[in-house]
Image 1 (cartoon, helix red, strand yellow):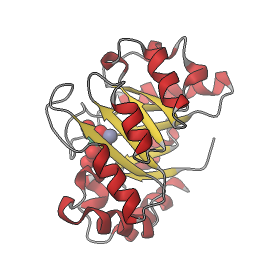
Image 2: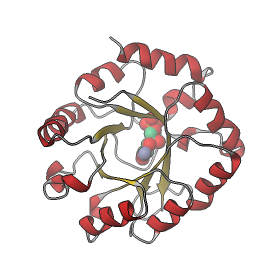
Image 3: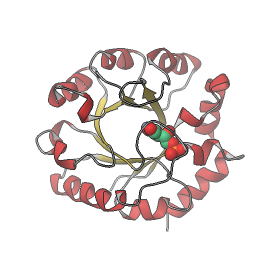
Length: 221
Ligand code: DX5
Ligand code: ZN
């Protein structure tokens, strides 16, 4: 297992003060910036595009930016996000006609690539592309909105994904996204996750540092 990473979802950040809020959560101990891109087509919500990613880089954010594409089609946005400073780009396999090609496209632009699995999407999408995947991201809510409740069936799916990754021997990250908080993070880690997205649990808290410390305490158990 690799060291645990906490990735606040900036979907729940203060958009009117985005640069400051992202800087604040990073100085509070966050490892990665989770950047949710929604297109009002693949998911019923609309958020931000490559310009906002570039603006964060121009503002001086140097931490890895983990771009979660909830868009369809996918490919045209890959070079734009890579140019805008994305570090990791993940996409939903149902939203790409040619999954292998999209993974190669992301890597050819110098980013890490990942597949995202909705609660009801089977892990079999990994079967023939595992060698091209740096991150497996399991959704523990249906994508589109922050602040939803963790779907418990994801725990068994995490364990299955952990088995697949360990059997492969590849250094693939296992990321979890949706409804993660201080109370359930330990159980989620025991099921196999090593990268934790948390939006509302962090940004709705009065003290980001305190929540992130509490998460690390739970993870150290
Ligand atoms: C949902 C997004 C998540 C979301 C997580 O579609 O992908 O990243 O912002 O928010 P919380 O942690 O509030 O469930
Ligand atoms: Zn996300």
